[in-house]
Image 1 (cartoon, helix red, strand yellow):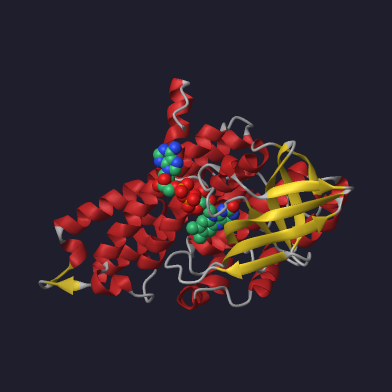
Image 2: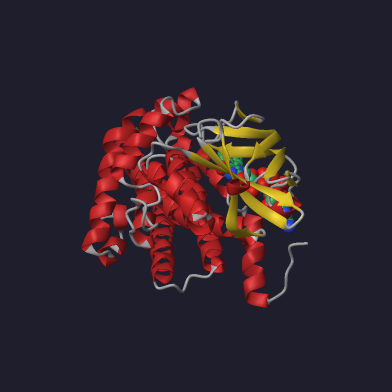
Length: 387
Ligand code: FAD
């Protein structure tokens, strides 16, 4: 039996989807896997520009978008790319999610023709990097409470505020910044070279270490009126981008969980205690069976939501279902995998604890478990329990 894909979920894929899966998997094994433990150890991506160019060549940035050099694949293909990247590390999938699902999607959906022409062709190739600034020090699950303000001054806009926990913030060329205005929440394209803009790397993270996370400070950043995203009005605009990125997480965490399962099967067959491989003990086999079920459920959930999305039938609550179910499953799998590896499991020689701690971030960003539970509760009762 194939523990990698026990129920042959990938048997449902088209030839094109399979080809994309294999290309990203091969790239991950050759270009990312040999380095990722060192990057995690160093707490950074040492050459984000080089990584962006090589991922641009692979074609994963904004691959589900059309025009401007984007690949225009279906949602399932994008999900598969996320799965194969996160099988290596959640930080590397985040690198792609932020660029494609958040920054590029915001410009693609809500930008003017000029904004799209200026940024998208360079972002597809990885020549330019974007970040997405929604969260603030005092505004996380409730982004409607944001304090960052944009006020009109003649024809210009002036932005003041602080964004927190922004992936790729200090390496981006452009920040999509969401701010409160007299007309409600609006989005702005902020070149990171603008006077008054600064980004500070957040150090001492013990999760998602192979990823750059920053604080953005906007101190009287003056922008021309063309910096406003004309189509983005109200909170539903950033939330729609988040739903795209969450879709990638639904798939991605299935990859992280799969890596933990495969590592655990290998380890349990070779590690001998009490004169037997630990995989021969019933208690270990129970753990492996539970992990196998979680991984395959996660893969099926991802594919089903992907097919709904490609048919134009995915509601954002479906994505919440996937995020809640699959992140929880991946966390269970990674924690069990860590235990099966014993002391070795706490080192970077094995992938399991790296995935386990990464998943702490993945559980928090793009909506916590509680937020998605409330979304699902609202979807089935019609009653809003958010506040
Ligand atoms: P809080 O909202 O303060 O939540 C704290 C706890 O309270 C949670 O358990 C939460 O579930 C619970 N809670 C909140 N409201 C309710 C409620 N109504 N009912 C029950 N429980 C509730 N943000 C960006 O904008 N861009 C990025 O690129 C980005 N990258 C990130 C990278 C990393 C490594 C991390 C850790 C975060 C990143 N974030 C980013 C921020 C992330 O989206 C927020 O952390 C997330 O939205 C949660 O907000 P918070 O951390 O302020 O937690």
